[in-house]
Image 1 (cartoon, helix red, strand yellow):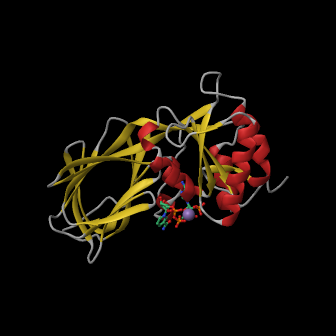
Image 2 (cartoon, helix red, strand yellow):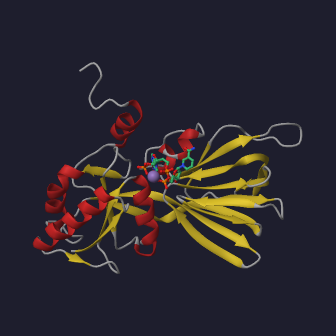
Image 3 (cartoon, protein in one colour):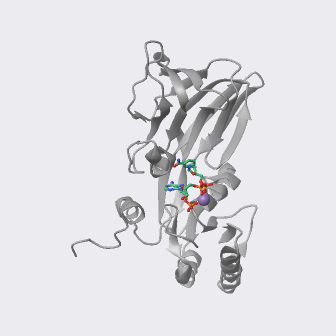
Length: 272
Ligand code: NAP
Ligand code: MN
């Protein structure tokens, strides 16, 4: 079993990374940052986003697992004190002998600029926002004009990302077994000229959405934790990717329980 650890970089996470290397060595696991079968993220959800983008080129051959060194995370579900138990699980299962995995959908975006087309995958979401002024853009769904948007921006998220930025925008929480993407507005302006739906929309697989910004605007494009400013974006097409992320799951931790524990704080039934 080839593995790699991605640490948030704080003292706690680094200490745990060293312990992991030590115990993994004893269990016969091989540190292989080039071709890991499993990527261990130690830190928070942001650390998993980093791990995802480091190994996005080998999603079909790699699964991910997260240990949290802060509060409970959506991606990081093992606690520091469970380290030995986790290593036991990782070391005794391989992709061939039935390592249990869950596969979650990703958003694919195709950014067209005068330089050509680039494709990216998002684990949580991508957003397009205006920098000095509002974003003005036409939105097409499946090549039909849908709306003319003016406002702070647009957020297109995955189901697993629905609990992140999307939630702050009033979007719905979507179970990650759904192969869909969600379009949420960021502070849209509505008047006679610019009229948007106002509600979030959920698009199934095989549908696509094109955002065509008015040319020449200074725009901020964010992809999970990464962001860049660009003036040359001609259009962005998004759809549910045919690729998925695989998480190694050695014990059940249902999505709705994560939601309850993260947002409502109940560890157990409040009446129980
Ligand atoms: P950050 O500022 O630390 O992230 C903001 C918060 O989102 C953190 O508490 C982070 O958890 C949490 N988070 C990340 N992914 C999540 C998920 N799938 N479900 C629930 N919570 C999640 O920055 P970061 O750690 O680099 O994460 C980047 C993400 O921040 C973006 O993908 C975006 O979703 C989110 N964000 C949210 C807002 C907003 O809600 N207004 C604005 C910008 C960005 P950890 O502390 O465990 O990392
Ligand atoms: Mn973070």
